[in-house]
Image 1: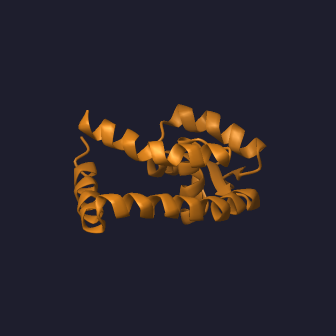
Image 2 (image 1 turned 120 degrees about the vertical axis):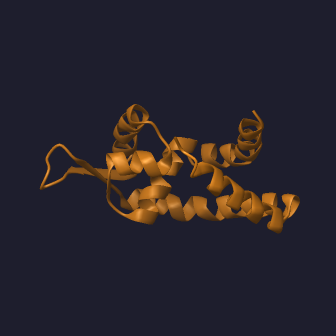
Length: 131
């Protein structure tokens, strides 16, 4: 419960900003993953963005229709769906990133830079304990 409360406390700072830009948390994670990694197959995107495959399937349609991502079938394996960020998605990243960085800096200032770094290290270690 403590982890969930902490996540909600942090995300309560980011959600209004994401709303202003017309994306939800999961959509933003997909856009960020594709912006950082380039083209990936849908399974890789789901794993990196921590999104369940059925949720990603619904999101792909929406994000493609909005022109934020592009999809294509893998030439070598037609069953495999490749996703990439579209120019409008890159533009969204450029517009949202400064707001996101500002919010993170404010949280870091309130919580303490060293404490944030320690927390991130601990959370990374905890996330590696997957079953």
